[in-house]
Length: 511
Ligand code: ADP
Ligand code: MG
View 1 (tube, rainbow, N blue to C red):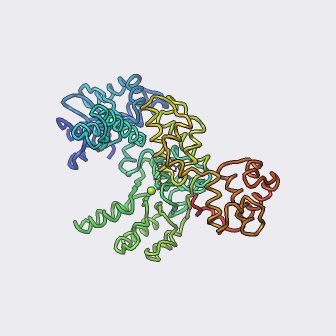
View 2: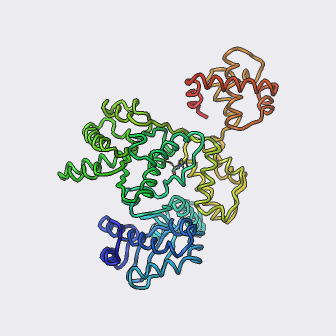
View 3: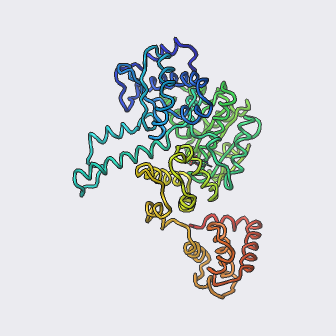
């Protein structure tokens, strides 16, 4: 329930006025986390008219309530970076303190710390570190060096974690189990995910009408969860009274098992059926689980019959879910199937730029275009990995208080990068292997069909992946003419359009 009056704030506050909140909340205090969230939700509403919309959006909304220490009269909020802490401390401390103090009825001091809610924060890491300093430091260092190294690691970890901290929060989205960061605003559309993105937007605007169910499938780390949750956020932003629920297939399964064990099947059914939109993530998890499939089937029907939106994500298309009942497979195909693919380099760079902006990085450090390109080209399998690499780099920037050059970035990722980086040699080797021809033949004069085809594919990939110019491609491929390369690449593109299997082959190349 959303907080509506001061008296209800006071009632729920009783739950959180524990003398000293531990850093890691035991399960029995989960309810107080909710109350703390409600308090912060109420505070946000009151702060809103007092600051500019952009200040609210950039600085205040992303804060996450962490702990309220009644005895010390302090409230701890988590911010995504040290920079954000400093900035908020300087500019918004008093408005936040005054609002919260007036809500709880006694003076509260604001404590800002870097971290992610609710379990791991910089201070949790610090606490762990204090009790067991040894494992963090390499053993051949002097005690002083070890201490410094441990501190460095802790700092890096805290910064990396904070980079993924929650960005926005409303009581409704919290209840719907949505990650506040997975909104349309934070999703970059581009080649690879454009169709899915457009479809998701349409569904968000016409839930239950446009396409039902919406089935998003694709490899891991390409944004399926993000996009599915973005629809949920959009629905709640535009119709806050809608009941939206996100659950992974695993959570759905566990919930059902629990309900069976405790004979609370009715409550389980209410939870999943008496709602307006249901998002179930990673439905491949249901494979081989007959009982859960049975329940899912009825849940699906109940929702679908009432035009309630169903959104499903999966690592493959429904037809490939071989251990799923046929009636579920066919229902999954009733609405819209959307395949999410790896975004191209430019989109991957745009994702990083957006992330940098969100983290406040761009305010502090200059991000070289070539560094972004290097990251986007190197980490080309999965956006989560790309984000991980970016976190590592930005953590270093913050630690060393400096921007990074391309050489330094290359050094940082060392072996990993050189092994992964797509370069002309890797392209050549992979294509040669695929066609079972010699690399030297691709670069040489031979004109057999196989070799010619391998050559065209290499030329195409040099252009597509490395953005080489035609003369550059010609020089690399045995000093061939610029015009020959233009022709070969055009012809290859035509073939790609006409032969879906060729496009599949290209995707499957281990580049
Ligand atoms: P999946 O569910 O497909 O495994 P996720 O939705 O968990 O992938 O995405 C992995 C990470 O990459 C998340 O942090 C997500 O925010 C980010 N991400 C993926 N695609 C995009 C995109 N197009 N724009 C912004 N962030 C993205
Ligand atoms: Mg996912």
